Image (cartoon, rainbow, N blue to C red):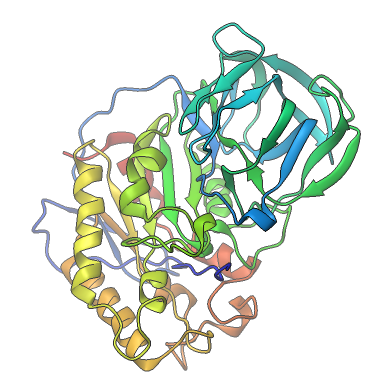
Length: 428
């Protein structure tokens, strides 16, 4: 059974009235209508490799919907949030139960559809082919490729045998392609058999920019449910564009590790494509990201709506989960941008009892100020006349997930100056 995606959405900024945690008060844009709290910083040593794009793998999907590829080439399309002169990729067989044999791979600059211009062959430990053990990832050798910020990249992977796409990111909101028979990794124009809208096996593309990277961890609101497919209108995409256009800073990467239907505290056993809960996948999806310098957390609405309608989970359980994410990030010097949970009145799983938990969680975030920076997306997206409801002009139609305009408003509420300061300097 596939569950609908839910997501904590939208950002504005509130700060605690005190500075107990040696915080620095910073002004926030008018849309946020509040203050942001940032920790004092210590210098962060630059890292050469940084993630320009990434997704969170999950699976395996139900057998009836598992894709199979045999003597075929996949061409997977991604957008780089930051540029560089060398690139490498990360493939994953982490949800597979058998070895994954890759016959060849390449990366190129997409010119449209499944066509590439400049295209460079990849190797793994000097070999064109690699067998990735079940449960493991593999990182390619770096190659020279000039990548500009917001370039569309095409990663081609050839499978000489028959493979099952048991490791994948299910909701790509991007057309990807599978070829007719043969190794077409070097082909400028892929002979397309069909297209599909997931990212099998590919989980990261790195560049040598030495840039700090913000990892955004969340559920379907971060994954982009309700946005226009193929247009890169998820809110992390809009945030990446803001970082460059408003700060003139193209050297901050943004990596989207949202998974539709994902939760913070528990797995959904009947929806394996929803991934492990965030507390479980934290080390892989946050800490293992190349160049990670900070974490943005927009998660928790699924924990509420998947709990009993009349007696949902206690808010204190949510508080404990957020504190764990914060403490584990701080152990590695990573600041955390927290986000309030979005309005969802009218959504299919809305009940007054669940709404009460959401309100309690948001009040705690604003009052206790546990995060290094808080973006109040509830305030940014809610209808002024009915604050429990998403603004009509931001509603994709299900009363929880924003549309393109809503995601842009969500990203517009992030306090960029405070965020950039934290990403470049870390936490004490």
